[in-house]
Length: 113
Image (tube, rainbow, N blue to C red; front, side, top):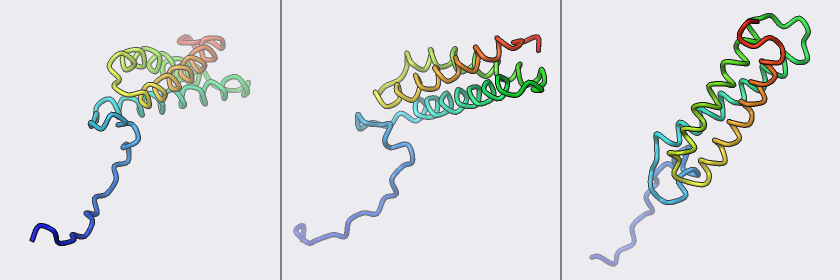
């Protein structure tokens, strides 16, 4: 009875499914894209805190600078190995946010605090 109706399979959609627009899974590239976006946004937020809070300590400058540098450097590598357009959009957004955090951290003391 090959023509009997089967109930639709209820597979749970993956959280990062939207990054696999080519139909193939890319788990390492997806995780790297999300991580770069998060690190870049953290650098951006801390850089804005450093810029707007005159009492921000030297540790905040160092964290903003180091996370921004990490987002920029790892982001450039991730850009080379990315597989889909959606991954590249997240990576470039993380690189830009990380660069702004890096610049704000450097302008207020950088690695010296």
